[in-house]
Image (spheres, each protein chain N blue to C red):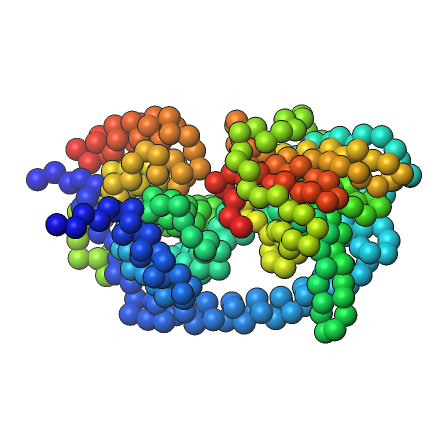
Length: 172
Length: 228
């Protein structure tokens, strides 16, 4: 039985994809887009803005795509950081233009539970929301979440603690 | 039945999402290509200027000086691609031939923001050290003038293109403000050697890049925040 390490598979995949930046980026999106979409929706709480914000983020990510990543975690952290920053930009824009303040939209939404969760997330502070989405929803470890958010590991832990407690109360 | 975080369902993408993305990407690439052509022409002009007179940076204008220049500034960094980005150029003397004409680039270690504005540097041309006289930089407490644990990325000697002579240099993801320290041993208004340190961080500063510069040897130390 041939044993192939995850690292070797990752190295092989990145080497294969290196020939075309567009192909490489498509593959990157295939791996991450669904989860990034959930994170962006959780951050924004506005289903109508998710596509536009993700497009801006992907465009920026494609233009700045590094030639290689040290690991799968580094790749995830980098991409989530770009998306996270674009979400923060969008939230800042909303604050400057209160007439478009985000409300949780029902359009295209079959799932009421999802609206309840989005509403609860909207009541968390932005930094707490980001941590709980990356760790509890997406499954990042503390180090990867810390790299994605550009904060120390201890900050991730304390924010997560705070966010979990508040979210439990809100969803109870 | 209780609701939890995993009940969060993302909205589906609109059907044309990827097509729109690639259309926008191609349009952006066309714009960037046009911009690059313009920059290439400017770079040739800058290269000519660097071989003749007072420097490639729009830095402080000073009377002739011999001694040690040492200053730390805190500079705002605009967001690029969703993240504040600082670009590091670092190379020794480098020559290139464009349309049959040879141009020479001076040895250089410089930081720029994502929009190409100087954040300080040290180079081999006269008065080619220091910070821009205009801009968002203000004096700050000193940061260490040492690699501070950063790994050595590369050492560039004359003839090596290095970072920033034939490309955009190393892109470093930083915070909204950076602390930049420029140190130069100056003889007759020209730096004989020097160092450039880049630190960032909201509450606690951390090292991002460090360059030990001499006209014929440029050693670059980079953190994981930098991609070349």
